[in-house]
Length: 251
View 1 (cartoon, helix red, strand yellow):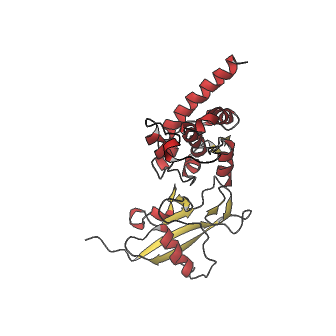
View 2: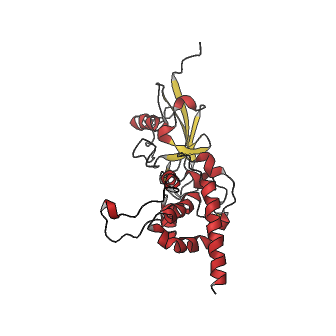
View 3: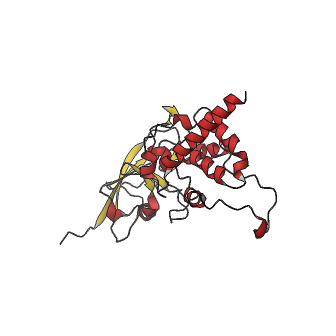
C-alpha cells in the first residue's frame, strides 16, 4: 500500500513590490484529500511560517470564483500556466513550485496585472455596438452554422494562460496574444458584430497583430477551456489576408 501523504511542500516565488527582486520561500502544510492550490495558499495565509520557522508576510495572490470561470487565479504551477483553483495537490509533483506569470507585470508575489489583455480587447473592439434592444421575435438570429464555434470561444476567461505560454508574447515580440485575437473572430461571427468586422481586421493588420503569431501551438496546450485557439487564429489570418487584398484593389 502506498504511503499516506502527511504534508504538502511548496516553493513559492515571492516579490515584495513591482520593482523589487524576486526570491523564494518554502512552506509546508498538512495534507488532506481533494486539496487544491488555492486552498493550500489559504492555509499558508492563516499561518505564514516558512519551513525553517520564520514568520513572514502572507503570500499575495488573486482569486474570485474558485470554479474555473473568472480566470483570476492564473499562475505558473510546476512550470505550467494554469488555474490554481482546479490544480489538485494529488495530481502535482512535490515540492510544488508556484510562480507569477511573468509575461505580465508583477504587483506582488503571485498577483499580476493583466491590464495589457484588456487594452488589447479595446484595440480589436471586442464588443458589439448595440443601440436599444429587441423583442425576441425581432432579435437578430445567430447563424446556426457558427453558433457552436461562437459558444466555444465565449468561454474564454481572459485568464492569460495562452499569453504566458506563447513564445511570441513578451519583450521579444509585440504580438497581442491568442485570446484577444480570437475574441475579434468571435465578434465577427456575431449577427450585429459582423458590421464592424473590417475595423477588427484592420486592427489585427497592425503592429502586434495576427502576423506576429508564430503558430507554436502552446496556447492550445494550456487553455483551461480547451478552446481551439490556433484553428480560429488560422481562420482569422485568412480573413485578414482577404481584407488586405480588398484594401489593395479598392485603392
